[in-house]
Image (tube, rainbow, N blue to C red; front, side):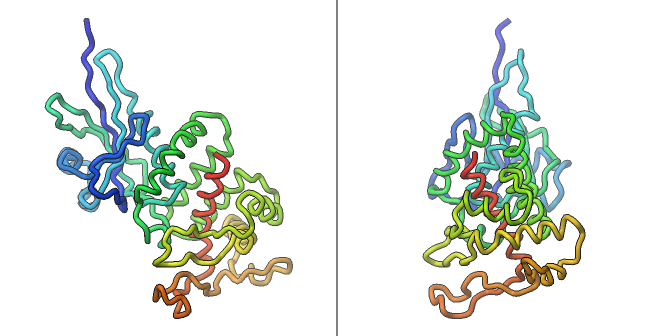
Length: 311
């Protein structure tokens, strides 16, 4: 008996995408970005028993959806957990280039012959991903998306392979973005860098990170010029403080002890310059943030830059 085919959709709602008037952008390998429309928003009704009120509102706020569409037949069903992992791997290609806001939601459904979609499942294993303020100051546009298209096959190759260090680094970036506390995010992101660098001590970490990225490379990538200049903290400046903060958090130590370190004192409570409050008059007042908070955000961006180099 001949088999009949239907299309299984798996999708993740996103925030902060800007692709002009386009309604769809193919990323290859059955993955695409689709602008929010009635078929995608129907998930709020079809999954109303599974979604909280806040989650339903989040779906409505999403401007674009990351979608994987796969054909299945009556003879061979689609492996839903596998499609979910494929789509999450694709999402990490975005996060490596520049963190994008997600709502921690992943749905799957089936497209009918008339083109409508019946949403009948939801992956509840995820938390929202939120990068720092610096990453949210620029929407994910076509220029950044070009870099994602180049990154996608590299992420897929690693996640399908056996290099545990790189696989763990990608997972740790995901976990860092999902955690709301900057100190824990720093712990996870620095551990992700160390999974690749394999350094034994903080001096090794600094040397290897500087060698890979360049000592003068900015920890905060220049996403927002000319309206906002990036914070001028470099890899060389932050490597030791990052490693110190990671170790203090990992060992449950008093963070104030870092300021009394005999070899490399770091005042993690000190206020540091962040971005100008009055662009483009850069000489005027700068926003100040606590050093530990700044390190938590910088660690995520540095792990992304490390992964761009090594994948």
